[in-house]
Amino acid sequence: MKTIDIVVPCYNEEEVLPLFVKETNEVIDTIPDYSFRYIFVDDGSKDKTLQVLKTLASRFPNVKYISFSRNFGKESAMYAGLKNCDADYVIVMDADLQHPPKMFPKMIEGIEEGNDCCALYRAKQTGESKIRQFVSKIFFSFQNNISDVKMPEGAVDYRIMSRKMVNAIMELSEVQRFSKGIFCWVGFKTKWVEYENVERTVGTTKWNLWGLFKYALDGITAFSVTPLRVIAVMGFVISLLAFIYIIVTLIQTLCFGIDVPGYVTTLCATLFMGGIVELSIGILGEYVGRIYMETKHRPIYIAQETNLDEENDLI
Ligand code: UDP
Ligand code: MG
Image (cartoon, protein in one colour):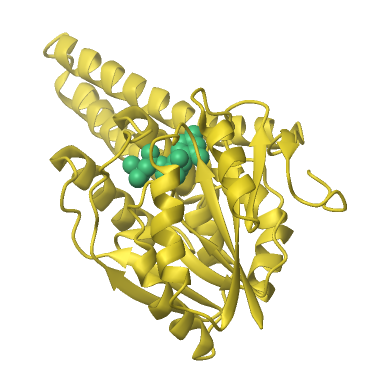
């Protein structure tokens, strides 16, 4: 019998977890040909998530958990889950039931067709704020246009992957992880399946607009150096224009003398150039910051408790 591990990052999900396991178990019961195991990753929750997980683990032997020493973020939680799983297939999904378990049969069918991955994307972002939809749209078009990873608009972190693919993902050891990109970057045959977006009914989203913006920026800088090229090209174009302007001004001055003091021109040029320089340093800084964080080689997460077998090393 093939085994499937379900990796679920959880941050303050005490309310939804019992419901999540109940609903997922109902789906699992309809798929008797596979043996399922949950790997919940408690990402330093401030509520009773860990206690709830322990209660669930005592009721269901296939419920495993890893608990972090603090909140490391969803990316780290997903990494910890993937690192500690050993099944033939691995499903990654959210705890909040926004990734409906009823898609399992379709996903398994997708991977059994000879693919290494069956991933989901949502066609419509119903139930999400207009601003969030807008940020998401910009992100996907940016990401697909300037980096080497391509993904359909609305791609989410809900997917099933083969062991081969999970092993490849583990080879990427970067600390600042952007899984959406990593999943695409490793390649392998992926089947994309559309699903209907579900609104979160229990608990609240952990994202705010600033968080989403940072996430989008991480995604872009992690998989592309195009912004650096853009500033180089911008510098070249501005220098060229400045050179032409200097020649014109020189000729004008030599032929006709100095007419006006040029106060506005000087002011505009200074402010404009100031802005461009700041922007360029900012973009450069983003990359330098990333290099700085990577060179520290800090662990991606620190676990403090687990009910996984002892032989599974934790980090
Ligand atoms: N999550 C996490 N660590 C965090 C934030 C979120 O493990 O720091 C988990 C969360 O418990 C959920 C998933 O990541 O299972 C997605 O989070 P959320 O539903 O808040 O995001 P959204 O669906 O709004 O994108
Ligand atoms: Mg959610």
